[in-house]
Length: 380
Image (cartoon, rainbow, N blue to C red; front, side, top):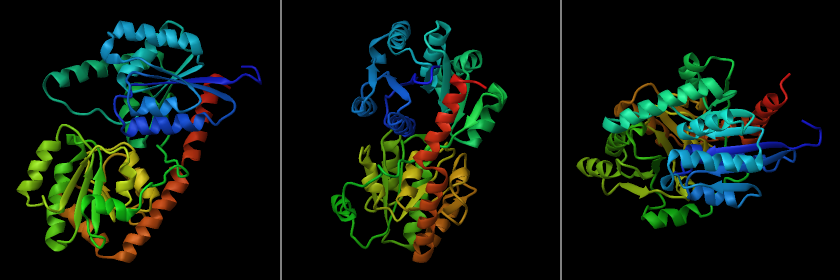
């Protein structure tokens, strides 16, 4: 590559959701745009929040609606877009995009391939389970055959895929938070007013898709136990998903309907997290959840299950408490310890901010990704 030539990077992502992978990809792409030595583009397979945000950046964005095209048609459109931008590195996210990227490289539409593994496989039943199995096998095959490098967002995920792909191609780069851009746009009081929460009420909450792996049924059972000791506490769950109706039914069964707020999906989730006194994670597994990083950047204490990447985020009793169990009784005990000790809550909150600054800031993430890009384009 000539000294004055810009490195060309293209990101390929589905963009059907606005969840952790999409937030992290957008955060990274936005920061890459500010690097003068790069020329950045993006291909998105769905119209949505992500595509809208990307279009506001000074990059070329191609959107191909996957629901309107078969796989072959989608592949041809991706290859045509790559013909225009001629990226030296194509950076993909998730299974379908990984397979599209591999086939594009096979046809010499990209020189180097990188993928990010944002999380572990979600468990399904019935036909979805079979489809997931097929996609996993195809993804593993094409990754081994065509990918030059694989980013895992946690050491836990790296260890899970080490046997499949070998250590040489694996690099762990933790997710990050753009501290400069993370600013609530509403006052805490206005948000509490929206939900009818008294200013003096402690608020315990969480954010995520209402799917089994998030363990929100455990959250509600934990809330039931906390409420027996501190009846003034309000509980807030932010997010949507297939289990929302069932979780609301469980909430009623536990007698928590008057104390629990389900907000549904909120693009302004950060405003709601800002009213939390305590952020609680009850997941059976996590990668490096963006919602946790953002809550910590706001100085929120965290109580969570010691599963997956959570053990890489939380320094025990410095920025929060990790519980080595999904038992709601143990989680409730940890929550009560924090809620009943203002000094401890404040200590964890400051520890959370410090942890983000030293390991999960955008600058750290950007520099690690840039180092990987440069090594691939100009191997030593």
